[in-house]
Image (tube, rainbow, N blue to C red):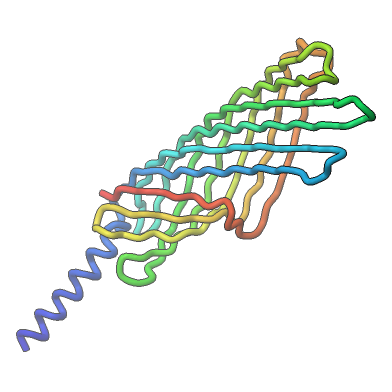
Length: 226
């Protein structure tokens, strides 16, 4: 009888330890990082268009569990984007080249809501909804043999984002959790305003909507629960 009670107590302790990280009144602090790279090399020898794009970002966050498995919080972040484009055209004995480079830096801030569902010991599924507003600056430079005078244009950017991202959390210890999440649903509104110093520059707006898992754009995170 004593052995059975001891075993039951141990099971209860394990269950409590696995759930204690997401109990009401607890907190989490951590963040996520992401990185993507796109490189395109053409095979057409008469018109060569190459692309080299790099994107990366970091998003620290803090959350508070208002009830069991339900946390609300605030995230802040920074992301950087760099795109290099080059086009080569062959016309008779002449080679014409155009190239452009765009660099942008953005800071963002916004609230999030997250709910955890227990799967097995040390593993939890979660769904997160968040909204962000981002502000930044962008610089575009154009050149090449088709440009008599290379130009450089500065832009101010503003973006609004709402997204839903499910994921999995692994708790190797009571306080630490490793996470992997994938975007499922997102809406993005982007505005770019030029500096007005170049007659060829222009301001524009862009809206995008995405639905469906994107396995090529995962986010890896690490949280500390206390």
